[in-house]
Image (cartoon, rainbow, N blue to C red; front, side, top):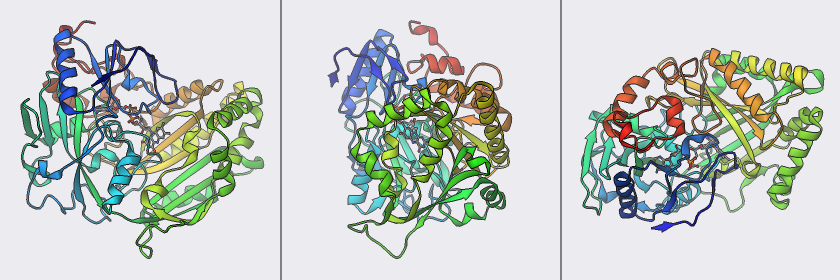
Length: 512
Ligand SMILES: Cc1cc2nc3c(=O)[nH]c(=O)nc-3n(C[C@H](O)[C@H](O)[C@H](O)COP(=O)(O)OP(=O)(O)OC[C@H]3O[C@@H](n4cnc5c(N)ncnc54)[C@H](O)[C@@H]3O)c2cc1C
């Protein structure tokens, strides 16, 4: 186990920084257990971190921080005692998808490495977000999502979790009944007890718990056979796209359907948007050596050739010094993204590509299916008002992605009100004047539309008012009871959990 020399920890876009007492980089389960036991006897808080791609304060700790990247192996599925019928059962697969297989993976593997390992074995993730730098446990813990109303967010594809608790004991958590995965606990090379818990309530509570219920050591993940996707991206006018969304066929007829909206009127007329549709390409079975079609080279090439820091500085300069050009900049960004029939392996097509390297943070909010169109209209109004009132611009287009609802009580997509939510994301270029204020104003207004902010993006969730967890998440109090069963001392708490009202039974055992 490595302990890194003192340095300030910064997240991906450097908007969260902290100087923890100790920073660990374990490479095996035994190391992880030693760290937790040591923290337990000394009374320190602990926080597991992935790639630090969250823009919120969820991953910070003043005491021990555990960088999990050294835990990145695919484990042998034979360690699991799979229940007959558990593999190949429809499970968490999308309604339109083929039943899949199970892989067992350590928590700190980055998604791009996981995609490669799966691809080598003819397998693939059912779905993913637009980026692959995050760790597996990181995307599960915050309910990171991609798009598609027949597809779920990351935790939906998790079938079992191996969780390390605050006293150094292990829990093998999974669903019960027909959805159970195993007949006995996972066999790991350790002498600490492994508690086998088949309980929907406990499994779903741990699945999306932002690192505060324990450290996810490994997950059993449902994956499918590898497949190709065909992507088209074309221009639309918001007034027309809005009508299509209201009818809903475009959401049902495409595996993935996303909309990127310019919040500023284009040449005084309609709001322009970019519509992305992706569908499985059945005709081409294997990844072509040269992908068919391509993302616009005029856009990808400069991003490949010009170093990121120069592009970021240029964008920031325009936004901070010449804010009235922001609408043109946003229009230019959208124009560069059109695509004619790009066909490639699923995980390559789902990844947004070089655009991810632009240093930006975002607020992202989940809306119930019957409220999101009103929310879009409200966002456009707020942006127009902010510009008129104080020349404060949203510096990038905002996006709409549609995701199936799920049963994880603290997932933004949790819901019994409908079959899908619309996730609306407002990115803003890093270190631009007024960026954070704009996001905050929009977030605040969005609670009136049933909005629930993404844990991993900038958010002000918590407290007692409209953003309180009990109001946003109807099952929050039940979740808290489960949390307190696993965390009596509050080892994994931090300022974020405190602002959210997540507290252990005997939290005073720990120094505060
Ligand atoms: C460029 C970029 C693109 C993005 N694209 C998307 C997208 O398309 N869709 C989307 O939904 N989000 C997206 N996000 C947000 C991102 O997916 C989430 O913030 C995600 O949680 C980050 O994963 P990470 O590995 O960096 O985890 P971190 O940010 O390091 O940690 C996130 C949380 O997970 C917890 N955690 C980490 N490891 C463990 C563990 N082993 N056990 C228990 N808890 C753990 C941490 O304590 C923390 O609470 C994007 C972010 C960036 C910067």
